[in-house]
Figure 1: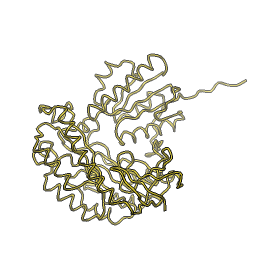
Figure 2 (figure 1 turned 180 degrees about the horizontal axis):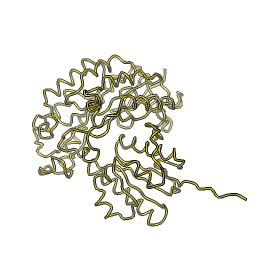
Figure 3 (figure 1 turned 30 degrees about the horizontal axis):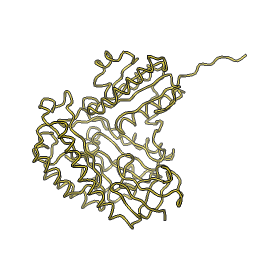
Figure 4 (figure 1 turned 60 degrees about the vertical axis):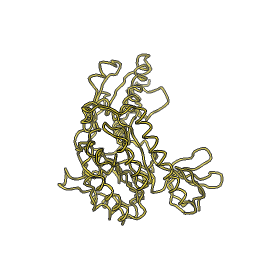
Length: 436
């Protein structure tokens, strides 16, 4: 006679928002997997008894996407296709009380710092011994690694401190341990991420310690590429630049979101820096780290942004020619400093300004890509897309940057492997070549 055994329910985790949210989802999944749950990430099957939605609450579009996703699964719960619906992440942290009244189908709402309570709600125990271990959702050859949580910056437009709290650095030992575990599992590239990576160490070690962290991570055997994201320009730790320049496994790449350039807007946005200091920093970075690719993010349509302010921004990107660039339009977020100002720029003007910047950036990117034709580049291959292998150079981060395409008919490479590619042609945002 067979005995009936208890089996933990299947869980499907849905992630919305940024790479920092993705890491949080991977940690949740790692904890559940260690508790013998059957866990999937964004599964298209409808066999999960429990759905956990990790939400984003950064700007209006992201909030709406999160709400729509919750409503979709609330409908599934009403139709009894799932047994339990749990919501966590930034949107839940920020609007838990209001949302719980509006969407009663959700069984439990959790903030960004309530992982143990979330696990208890599904019958799992929080396992302290995991020490950063997690269930990867990315291809195993690359991973995102958080070096800190939260932010102490007072930027006028940003709600992140409301949802993530103040800056808390993760110890170097914990970061090293996490990365070593990833490397043992086949990871070749790590993206070091934080809300503000330049602040790293100030709370733990009494000084900005990004340079030492980069050195220690660079020493990890088997780690081919290290990529640094979200380096706030104000009070940038200049001692990190020689480390980036000298270490061969640190990508010559830096994500440094400047947001704006006119002194009027930098002051209004409370960025703690001037145009002169921003431009000086960019020149210094390029001088100290030869060939570095700089990625930046810009914000248009903030209250008080005049046509002159915007034209200054256009002229700035035309002069400095960032290798990679993204643009957001201002979102009027409750309880931020800018919320006390009139949201005085029409949506169509915001969108037109964003489009103008991206048109300028397309010209810059095409010019820079044209200069790469005929050169040979080291490429890490991420996926097979139709009849092409698709990868990236050290100047490109996954999902957000340029890609390099190689015909699968005439070339062969395994996913997660490096190969040298001779560039034969280009488009504004991609390169095309052959393996040599």
